[in-house]
Length: 230
Image 1 (spheres, one colour):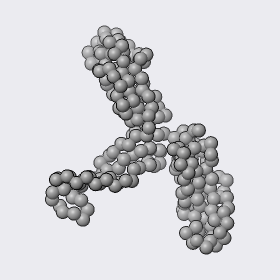
Image 2 (cartoon, rainbow, N blue to C red):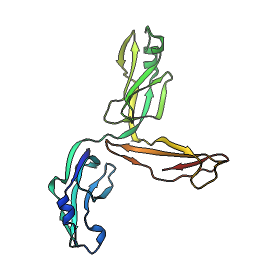
Image 3 (tube, rainbow, N blue to C red):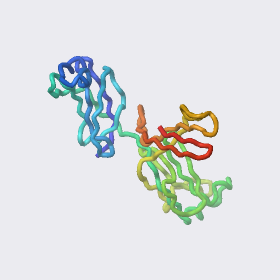
């Protein structure tokens, strides 16, 4: 299975043909059925014509199918409705294992900050280059979140030259959930004193045009804090 982006093109002709249904909610809509990259069947609809670039990520071994209903019968949408593109970018946790051998090998550098440390270079979930530094051997569970289409590279410097590690490793794990604060202030409809309202969003997997998010609501009541998760 490969997780692939799909462009979705919705035809105004297909939207116009989607009529005459007893269930009027099916009228003037094109549906796209697919299996997401976690193996769950999905069915989404569109009611506006146009091209939606890299709109969804799907298992390309199962197929992405566009259809609509006309007079209560299912009809296939224009064959050009779904077009497979490149590999999806998903934000993943990585376990980092740092070897004492690699730490001890990092010596003889003009810059003393490069001695006795192992670096891990990766692309973070906002698409930026990032680096973590370790000076203690061990395994760090879910230590970083990185795009799984890029390389996560443990490395060290010896005598001012950079080398990939032979013993330290980065192991891909499950999808990340990174939380980003959007706003703060009094809770909606609540008192303006005694509480602080934080609104933030957790990104589970990020694609070029959208993020899948955790929509659960969690409320923690403390003497001075109120947390609300979108």
